[in-house]
Amino acid sequence: MGTRYFLALFLIFLVLGFEVQGVHVPQEEETARPALLTKVQESLLGYWNVAKAAAQNLYKKTYLPAMDEKIRDIYSKSTAAMTTYAGIFTDQVISLLKGDH
Image (cartoon, rainbow, N blue to C red; front, top):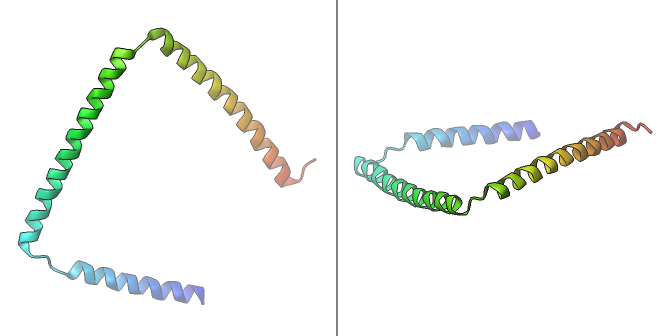
């Protein structure tokens, strides 16, 4: 029953998809949409570039080599610890699922 229902639903969506593709949009609307899309893309790209430049300038102004080294050290130690604990946790879960005591 479930497979027949799925097949019928798939065929309905397939027919509807072909119907939607068959609808013709007038030429005027086709040329208007890309212009609007282009304006929106250019606007968003402009905002993105301004935000990126501001973030880079802020990073350059506040960059401290000593702090950067400490952050890198803390990151490497914490990832090593998390990898170890994740391995232990994985082993415990597998042991529980297998039933090994």
